[in-house]
Length: 124
Image (cartoon, rainbow, N blue to C red):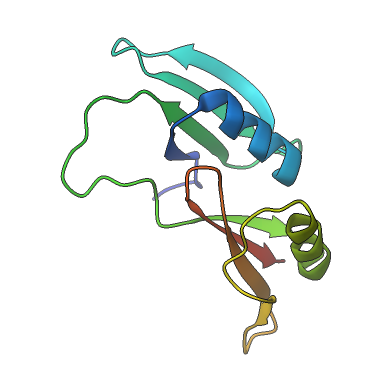
């Protein structure tokens, strides 16, 4: 059995640009950086409250069939509507015109990160 999610890895074109994006818009902080033997550069970002980390990978040369960025990374927030408005005002590309409310009451919306990766913002 697993004990939780350790990290999600996302391929990015510009490591510094992506770090700045996730720090500015999602409150993540850089936990560590490294360079792999292949020359690819990585950074692990985490939320100040802990939990799973986001690994950003730039310059990864090998690409296997089925590899991609990711389908989406979901961020939990206290106020979905306020986050939607803040990201809209900041010019972050939004996928929906407004947050959705699911039958269970959970609210969510999706937007795009700097490399086109799908990001989801969810309540609770």
